[in-house]
Image (cartoon, rainbow, N blue to C red):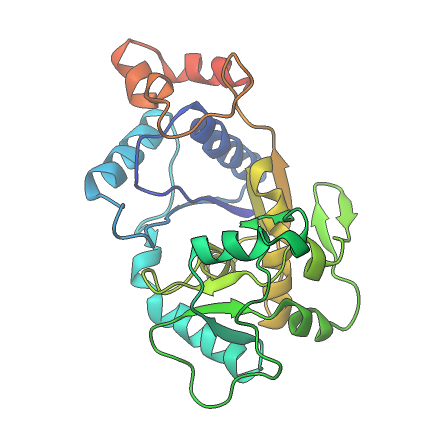
Length: 277
């Protein structure tokens, strides 16, 4: 069984890096006689646009990719995410946080704190809102919620491990290297970390193929899978497509947008050659 996915956000055009990730996942699923899913990461409704989603689907089809319909959209799954948050809340693993980004920067910039440590989500949260004991009562309806990493790790039966390519990875202490990550946001309901874990589980994803820029987030996802009783897929973090200066591509790199190449007469075979497939 080989089931994988490509999960872009409809907030801009697909570029060569997206094309590489999608084609690599599609190729591997096809070679294994498996399934390739397209999933739309549209949690951020302030930036997601239907026209971008339509262009994503058009570009992927032009590249020769196919996937089962209907396409899963994260914006339709908020009750599922809320139910998982409620489970973690009842386990005593979440707490509300009112800190803004500027609050966090100010806290870690205090002279006695030393140089701030960085994790998968940027500066590691200093624990300003972390309570001494798990909060009691019902989970707040409209609040940012953080995972109490120390309590979460303490619930594991043993060291956290997951499959990365052909190796077994044991990540370092996540209380030090990751910290209390956000699992629910006021403006989006759930964070990327929670949504991707539940989506992968519900689509029975067996192999996650994504860029190496997301490798630092994988231990968070595997931890959540353990806490929620979900099966962990195998992970493959591929190389990134970079520009001539070595900088990885972003959505603002319109010159490398798939639509631009199409307009210039580039073929899907040419795109494959450009990204090394």
